[in-house]
Image (cartoon, rainbow, N blue to C red; front, top):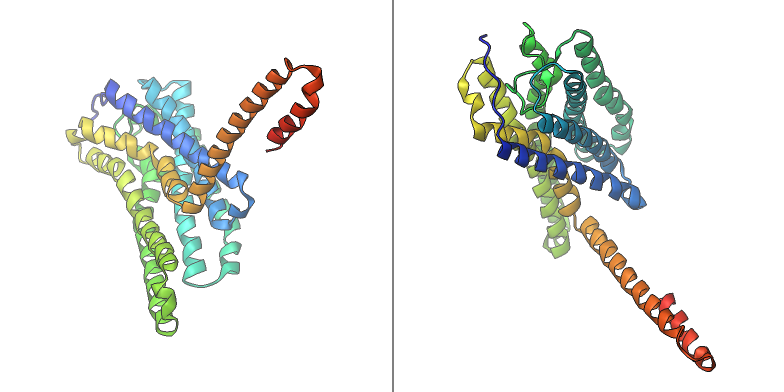
Length: 333
């Protein structure tokens, strides 16, 4: 395979991808914060989503540093950034598939206990395998500068290694390909099961199928089950395309549009999850809105209280008995 020059990363591409990293970081952080803030949201599926958000957060941070630096050699921070992004990115694939498997077991197999028993294995696999792969790659000096052949400024697998394609597969691509197949299959099976259940249920309880609330919630769940694999594939396909172009020694992998889409796809997963599971979830969205509104009202009331207390300081002493109860009532509100 012929060596090529480094793919040029333009300033506008940096700005777009760095913005994607920031959105993904805060999106992942919002998922984690909502889980910590409201106890009734601490279900097992959302807990798995939190683990996925941790990996997306790490990915966003490591990619942000890589895109900001635009590495051009095997420096120490290049190797460190490449190791973190390799671990986080690979772990993200595992957790994404783990969530799909969990939902499949709960919904299709109707076994909550069996699904909960899988969580320990999810941890062992989703943290353990990426960690082992990353340590092996570091030990064999496979992580380093890749000339942005299958990255956008950040470091991944050292492009000068004779077996760099093998390590690109081991440190990400093979798990990405598996996710491409596994996610659509699992979610299609879940959707088919839900559809069949609704059809069977409507024969005995037609009132449920005509209920606006039930129909709305069912439609929303159906859209999410459809969007999860679609969004994953739409985000990740650009890096896969560049990887395949690398295998064929094609210069099309240097195309600025493809490079930009690759950068966004690799860094936007946390923001996409936040949009789907926080902003597009009415119960959580309404709580966030109420929380923001309450804080705004509290600040307004505190301002009014301070103003009233300041005014009472200049009120004659024989009128303090009339003003103090009012101030106490206002502060009580």
